[in-house]
Length: 193
Image (cartoon, rainbow, N blue to C red; front, side):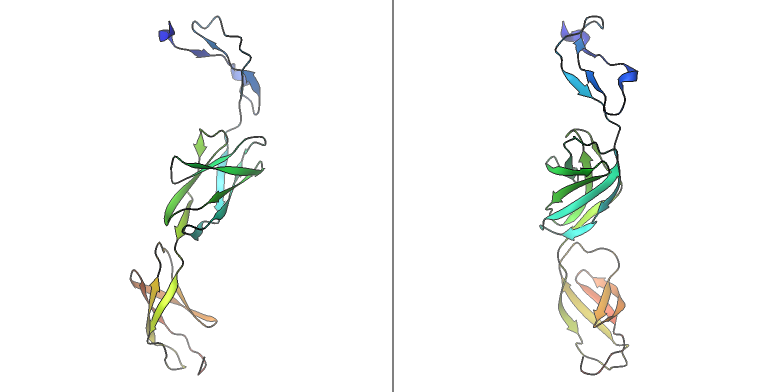
C-alpha cells in the first residue's frame, strides 16, 4: 500500500544548476514509475537589496529586487509582509526582478520566489507611509536672524526616522514632540521671504 511512502529518484550528481532530471516515484525504491515527468534544479537565489525602501500607502510602487542566481526562464513571484497573496514579478536579468506593490500603510518584508512556493528575502523592508503635509506652523513668522523655535503640525502616519524642517533652501533638525507635531529651530533668513 501507500503507507510505505513515496521515494523520489534523483542522484546527487544531478543536483546542478538548471539540470533537468526525470521525476519518478517508487513504493519500494527499486521499481520507479515511467511517467516521463521532469524536475529542474536551480541554484538557491539570494536577495541582496531592495529599492526603493519607502513608498506611499496605496500607491503603486515598482520595487527592484537585486540579488544572485535569479534564473532566466523562471516565473518570479513577490510576497509582501508574509501575506498569502503574491504578485507576478518580471525577471529583468539573473540579478534583478521587478515587482509592483500597492500596500497599505506599514512596514513590510519583501520576499521573492522563482517557483511560487519557496520564498527568500533579506533583512530589508519596505515602509509604506502616507504623504506628510504641514497643517500649521506656530508662530508663522519671526526675526531674520533666526533662532526661533516653531511648532510644526503635520498630517499623515507611518513616519519613522529623522525629521528635517525646510525653510526656503535652508534646513534644521526637528524634534518630535508628539505624533503629528515637531519643533524646529528657524535658521537665519531674509526679511519678507
